[in-house]
Amino acid sequence: MLYVVGLGPGEKEKMSLEAIEVIKKVEVIVGYTTYVRLIKELVGEKEIVSTGMKQEIDRCKKAIEIAKTGKDVAVISSGDAGVYGMAGLILELVSQMDEELAVKVIPGITASIAGAALLGAPLMNDFCHISLSDLMTPWTMIEKRLHAAASADFVICLYNPRSKGRPNHLAKALAIIQQYKSKDTIIGLAKDVGRKKEQAIFTSIGDIDETLVDMTTVVLVGNKETYLSDGRMITPRGYQL
Ligand code: SAH
Image (tube, rainbow, N blue to C red):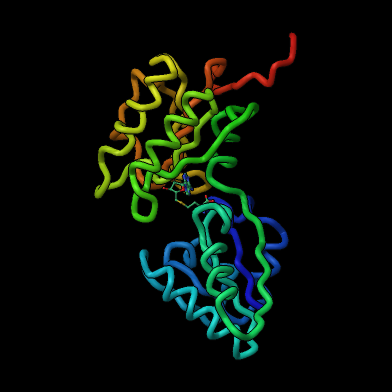
C-alpha cells in the first residue's frame, strides 16, 4: 500500500491519529528532508528515502517503485498532502501505470487552517487559497486569480508568498488586491505555525512590512468586514449580535 500523508504544520499535536498510525506502521518513509526531521521520533529505525526540494517527481517515482515490491510506504507532505503537496503527483503517476497500485491519501491540517486558529477566526466566511509560486503556474494566471478573488472580496490565503528567488511577488499581489480592497484591510501573518519560532503578526495592506514574510509564512488577507479585537483577527460570519 502507498500512503500519502499530510503531517500538519509541524508539531505532533496537530497530526491526525490516522497519520500517526500510518507513519508508525509503514516500512518505508519517503519525503523531503525537513519533513522527515519533523517526525523523527515516530520514524525510529525505518528505511528513509529522503531527497531535497525540487526533486518531487523523482521522490514520488521512487516511492511508487518501492510500493510495487509489496512494501508499505508513506510519502509525507507538510500540512495537507493535497494542498500544493504530493498527493496529486502520486495519483497522476499511478494513473499512468499499467499495473494497479493501492493508494490512500491521509488528510492533514493545512497551513491556512492552522494559521487561522493562531490568528483568531479569520476564515469564518468564504475564502480561497492562492499560491504565489510561479514555478508551475504562469504569473499571468496567478494575477488573474488575484483579481478574481479580490474583486469578489474573498478572504485570501497566500501560500508561497515570498522567497529569495521571488522577493517581489507579495508586493505585486497586494498591489492587485488593493485595486479592490481598501489599504486598511486587515492582514494576518502566521509564521512558522506549529514550529519553535511560531509567531502571529497583525498588519494591514497599507502597513505591511513585507520583509517579515518568508517561505514558512502564510498570509491571510481579510475581507471588508474583517477586524482586530484584543489581538484576534475576526471575520464575522454574519450573526446579528
Ligand atoms: N502542503 C502544505 C503547503 C505547501 S506550500 C500545506 O498544506 O500547508 C508551502 C507554503 O505553505 C509555504 O510557503 C507557506 O506559505 C505555507 N506553510 C507551510 N507550512 C507552514 C507553517 N508551518 N507555517 C506557516 N506557513 C506554512
